[in-house]
Length: 53
Image (tube, rainbow, N blue to C red; front, side, top):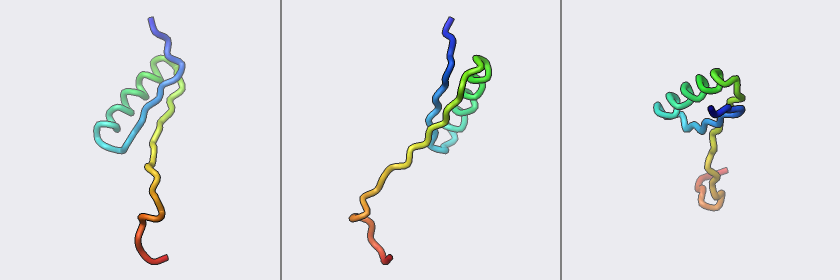
């Protein structure tokens, strides 16, 4: 049997990632594991951003 100690759940705030987070939380509780939620924000090139400062 696999014994999880950590669960990582990436999210993008979509409906499917919200459901995945619920499943990850259940899995983490079941195994008494640490749950880490990851959301990555893409970087942008400030040279390409147009507008007044």
